Image 1: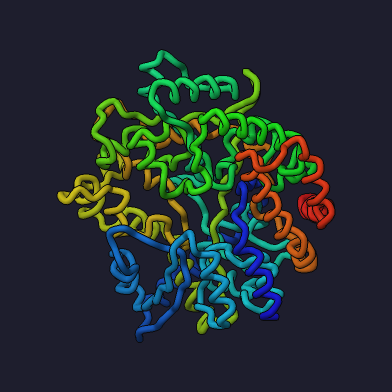
Image 2: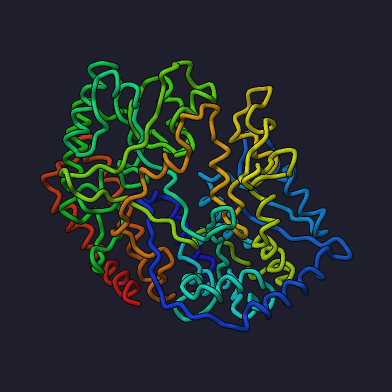
Length: 538
């Protein structure tokens, strides 16, 4: 079994996914009238369970990093949770960009922590279950997670999303919410931004169509010597520009029929467009070294680029406020994904449903009851509050309308530490995959002192468009399908990734696109599409 895991991991570590996407589907809604009373009784039992009489321990493997805190054990909420529960959690942290590789090394060692955060198992949770690495918690979750089950019982569509096709539970999902007021998928958090102040200076409107973008980028190059950034894989994470041609960078569906984007004619047209822009100097000539996560801020601020992908919490005037630039006119406006023709519906390349991130218990978990009860605590509104806002009266307050506001301790650090970094001293920011993911916390976090500046919801709302091409996020394959699928698909992804970059740079003849598609079919592309079609049908 370990040889099998190593083989899959080595292949998975060679690949960077072209585009991530997912879409939840509507299900029939039925309610268990006895569930609230049962949940209340079980929650009382959990209140009696914590704090533990004697110190107990759990271990958690999780991607995490912070600029102002060297160890996760120093974070205020981590220490607060230990004080409240008498459970010491030993976190084994890795950087997000190296998480897949580090997860593979952990698997190869055969030494697993009690709780494993993130969906890093190379063949999915069903594969991890079959390989004996991930624990089947089907019978344990209803026993030890009353808050979680209360939500799932009240929302059968969420319940279905959190189980495998055969009804088994392996992953325990975070549930996206907005200040515990409503459960809903997170706003798009990454997309394309543009120097609005430059557009204004040139008398130009925000670009809509591919032709508009060509004209604007040409003007930016001629007037400012700036270009547009592009993801190192040649396709932006959110699918911007690619979706204008009706495809995504991976598997997608069009009216219930599954396709692989890089094998479609629309992908060819995208490559031709990007190659033209690259040849004209409208795209960063060093795009193959560009990271959407770490590079946009400095490149925008130094005027190397005038457009490109950015995380929403860095749009508007945020970079100016963080000291990246002293240009008083600097303003990054968000732009909806481009369309081919005026009047076309804009398409975003990924969807974030209510149930997204997850954790699993390893089969080496020392105390499954303790682990599940601890995770369930993070579905408590009070715990969720401190997990995202920190210590009331110190890092946050609530105004007369009950709205959250971060204090000057967070927003105006005397040493100039950005609020997005300072908050890491108090909270785990992303919740580290436990309980609710309260994405509302970012709104007051990046609020500026200028009342005329739009808030984060308004900036990210520009990207909130159609996601019709996306596959359901929690769609699963059977263990047999998973093994067969990845025996082909790892090579296919590698082929597509390499061809994309070379085609944009002119190192591959795009007119020979059919030959490239045939080569992918020769190693099993049609079978991979068929497996995905079967899974979608279920």
